Image (cartoon, rainbow, N blue to C red; front, top):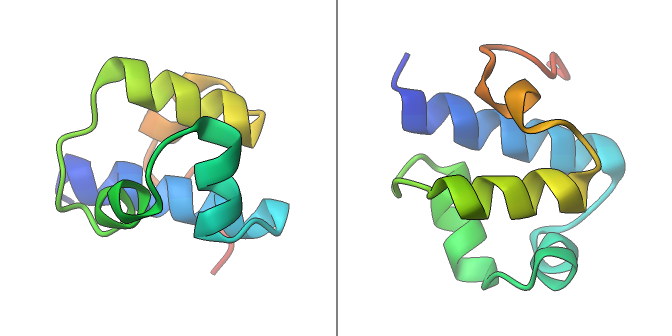
Length: 74
């Protein structure tokens, strides 16, 4: 699996588990919702800094966003 898609999928799965919309995650992380959407689709290379910001907003350790299928919400 493509690493960008894996991270994006983990972010999306964790976000939906928390019941957050992309807009809510955007508010919590102070990142643009268009940026978050493109990260979730695996279209962007996310920086370590933004990964940490998103992890904090989602209340999970950063390393969980880097593990394949960490949030099996399927």
